[in-house]
Image 1 (cartoon, rainbow, N blue to C red):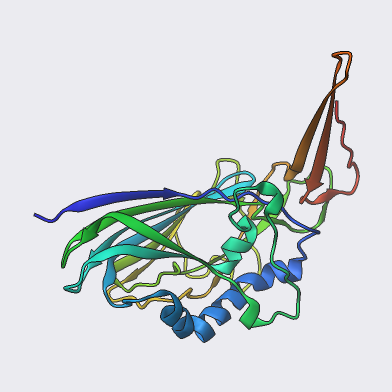
Image 2: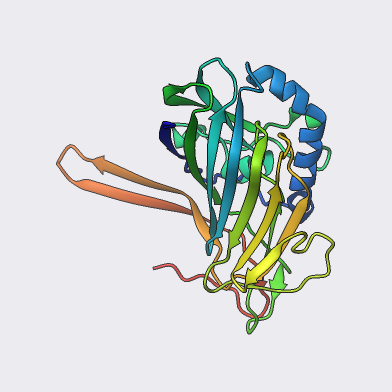
Amino acid sequence: MKLIYVTFIRFVFFIYVHGKLNIDIFEKLVNIDIEYINVYKNDIEKKYMKKPNSLIYEHVSKYINLKNNYVEIVIKGKLKNVQDTLVENFLFLLPYHEAYQGTNLYKDIEEMNIDPFNDDVDLSHFNLRVYEIILSRKLKLEENVLVKLSYTLGQPYFPYPLEIDFINKQNVLFYLSSKILLPYQVEKYERIEINLCEACDIVSLDDACFLKGLKKINDKNYIIEYEHNIESFNLGNKILLYFVCDYNLGYFEKVIKNINISSLGYIYEKEEYFLKKNAAKINKFDRYILK
């Protein structure tokens, strides 16, 4: 009987954005990511994969849960060792268009930063994130492991149009790739499931990428699936979701609390809130009240 090990890895990405994300850049992110993978996939394989053909996914699914102001992503799959040598780790790849929205992983939030990005992108400076995950036990030939990875994208939506009337609801853009970025082949099937938040409703948009390749299950759920011997290092094509998101996309970039104690024992507290807003401007009424 095959031994099945369960590995659960949870990543939480916090957003720390310098400046406003231009819509032109936002629209290009996935396209440039696809181009980067196509150009550099062989280099990535040589650099990070000691035994590139030792593992395959029997099946893998990616669940994209669109929340009001963030996106929760869960990846589940079954990895299998297909060679005689023991396997003690595997790789997880985070594509740049997701890593960009999630920033880098650092212990100290003050060290977090965003890679420079502009319209004149040099592909050689692009950075996907590569994570090596160590298994609790080594896999023998034909043994498998169930994998579950979850992470969160902060500030993933772009309000469009940028200005709306007071009576209108806010619509937002969200781009994704049609395939999961995997360093291993998939034997049976690869699936992406998209789940919209309760208050979110898809709106029609005249764009070649709008719901491209997605199968509608119901008003809140969409799916895309590939079957049999799916190649590695492939992001597929770009998909656009456009939907009503009647929710405040403002957020606190940073909160600082200073506490000073005087020589007489008095305690003074000062709090600073750095508020940013990545939402459509209401052209008839746009005011914040903070108490």
